[in-house]
Image (cartoon, rainbow, N blue to C red; front, side):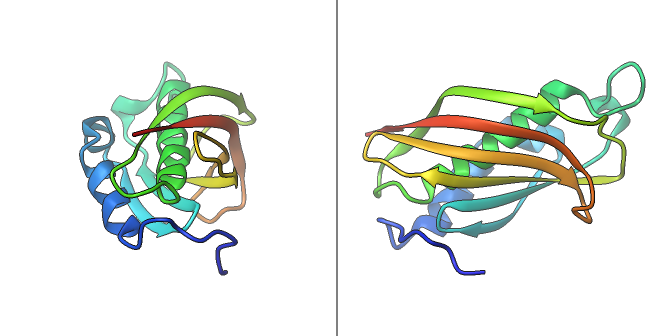
Amino acid sequence: MASMFDPQDPQYDARVRETFAAQRIMLTFGARLVRVAPGETDIELPYREDLGQQDGFLHAGVITTVVDSACGSAALSLMPAGARVLSIEFKVNLLSPAKGKLFVARGRVVKPGKNITVCTGDFVTQDGTKLLAIMVATMMCVR
């Protein structure tokens, strides 16, 4: 599926991947950036017991962190060269307990802007059959 946005930076893919690699929390979680397109990113997260909560489900804080990163990465893909991204607001709805072996966080830009970009994110099972969480996030361009 083709993106509906044109990136300002022709090197957006490399920049998004480099920024993601610098997020040590993603390394700690074992998350992998698996897809980058203008205004879109997907992050895979394997389940690990140490990322779970008391009932064995993936912890809500982990879910939120990974979806926030997917939204921020999607926003970054549309920002000018040299710009950074900073989350300034988000809301998460946890829809179902996160059970499974592998999950995907998908970040999508809804409305890019010069200073503020609005994104949506979702968190699904690997096969995409179960929606576990959704996010609406506002990202700020930092020059």
